[in-house]
Image (cartoon, rainbow, N blue to C red; front, side):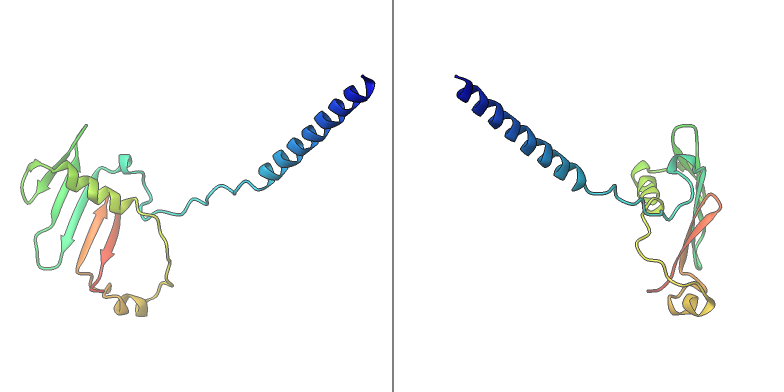
Length: 131
């Protein structure tokens, strides 16, 4: 009887050691938390109060945020399309995947010296060139 009790105790101890080793291995192998990538916009979308779409040779389109919705205030004063505003806010919230060196030469090569279009979110503008 003592022999059988000793075998069970040894088996249980061995299983406990195996479980402990596996637990430590799983804990050590846990992937690190993903890095937060910087975003295009410096504000949270909820903090935005105005959006302007500036296009070369065309009238500027301006949107203003009301209490719960967005309104186009120029060239017309009408209720803005929520889906389209959300699309603009999605652009503003994109993560930056690649950064290029800044400089005047780079502006010319990407068509950004005189951008074809700019979207201004509050006081921050995103320029779109011809590439």
